[in-house]
Image (cartoon, rainbow, N blue to C red; front, side):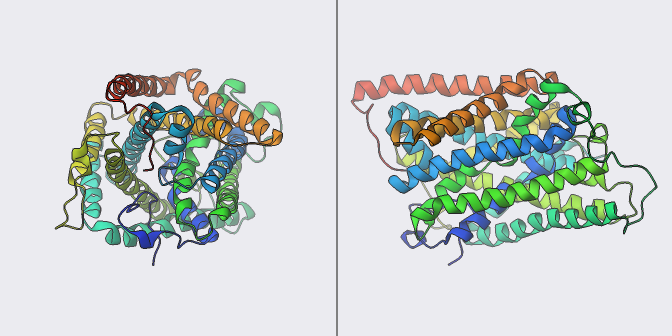
Length: 460
């Protein structure tokens, strides 16, 4: 049986899907699910605000991400639950935490979906600059919903092909960039920035720029909580930490080498969020095919992540409804058509529609705003994981210290968006959304208290 491309698919519908993955298969799935336009395009925002020190941001984010996964894997091993970090939040703090965590995850995934959709539209303008973003966004929305209508088996096939393609794109860039630096590929004779020779060169915008870049490094690793959910599919649940270590090691090597090559080849001032920094790095070489091939590969990567996000929000809402944390109407499925959860899909489609409308009115800034807001909400979830682990697990002094440092890194990634004016509005969006979730959660706690359900805690 082939593994599902997203961890929360068919969690209740297929008992045979339990315990069929080896640790290395989970690692490969993690790499495939994590790499998206947040890395291919969003990294450009980070490079623009901090310069060459973006490599250090990626290393710090890798360490912080590892600690989040490490603690989530420990909770999974001690008490395997399909609700994963949302369940553990409820176990640690009460039903309100589970409810808020679930809806925060749903909201962040919708924003990630919108971010990927906007990125796809921006990248498509590489070939058709005269066509507005909202038209491309509409087209990709329809295609993504079409993949959903294929059912889980059709989705699996499409997603596996896309995952291989986007990973191969980074490997191709590394090979071509290495060959270009060695001199095997002729260029226009321009000089390369090379290795930064001073702290000023490494941190051209000082601590402020470096601080602001942390969120985009973390965002590129987004999905670790998803892999925590997939740990339920391991044959041996105790191998979850090994799978996470291998996944993060592979991602860190790929990210650091490829970003390092970009920094060696092109000035950070030439990087723009409207074009992948990898395309910019090879723009001066006689590789007329590369921008087109790589741009196509990034579009594939973005479409893959966006469609996986659409699957995620659709099925997550079904689980929320099943557990009483969403209206029961969203639990309904069309058994006559591949068991499709139509009400849940309809709400997710509204999220796509909102992204299309936003792209219509804010074509120049929407990607940076959505990416920032999605990354911040993702950090809130990671903070919940770290907090829950400290309450539920008997951690060693070392793990307690490392978890505290990771929490400080997560806080730094979030607060860093406040010091950079160009991305600050994304922070405001995240706070507004969090306030709405908190208000609804407060109302629900009053309802649960009246009905005697406040302490209800069950698995997703």
